[in-house]
Length: 314
Image (cartoon, rainbow, N blue to C red; front, side, top):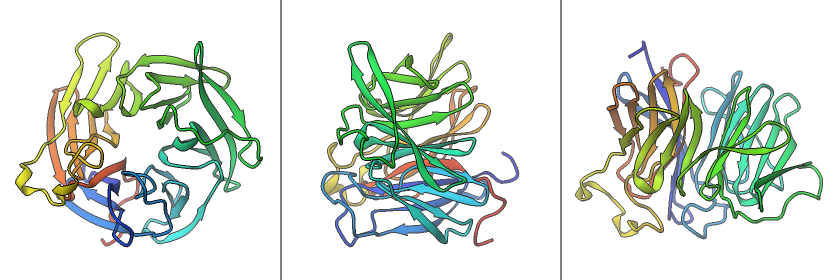
């Protein structure tokens, strides 16, 4: 392992009640197997109905010295010590999941609107929107101005939860998109099929990498050759807490969400109860697993490599 490999993860405590902590931010030093909780999220002015609903913290990205972390309907900005600098809202941001930076724009999934929002990192405002809907040919994408009143309605039919940007395209997918779709500025084209219920789908090498959440595995599907299938860790039920919530509607073991590439051939995946696991794609094996909480409700949401030297308390 390299000198020090550190990940940053966000979590959602599904089914938590008002007044309780419903998520947080963790720094995970894999080299020394050390976990540091840097943010305890207990905001009370959220919508508490449903399982995850507005609870917890979601996607993570970085721009220079700034750390961007999305909540359900607000984009928070922290410094490297996790002191909150500011936050931004947009009327078309609801039930945000993953976020992805490309050049000078941060892209956010607005799951509640079946939309993608673009946040201008120089002007610090929401400057672009893309409404996604289903038509007879598949999915269609229509740009909109997030500062106007003419954006999409609340709908969440596709449950867009994943976005990944690179020079070739913006890749989006969700629980009910039936595949990963590439947006190149005009059209949305399906580039690979996906099972229902996936999270964190993205192109990787010559294939697709994703959390096959319904099957409790992380999956790498190359265009040719053998699939990489990695079982998500499962714990002895006697070790778990808050098991009165343990049903598929609220919280369950091995719910896979959160995925990042640490270096070529080595990836990290998140799961519940909050666990981060390393998988070696070339050797087809699990190499390390670290548990952050045995509360069955506590699930990883966002997962990224920490780009800064050292940890805030070092």
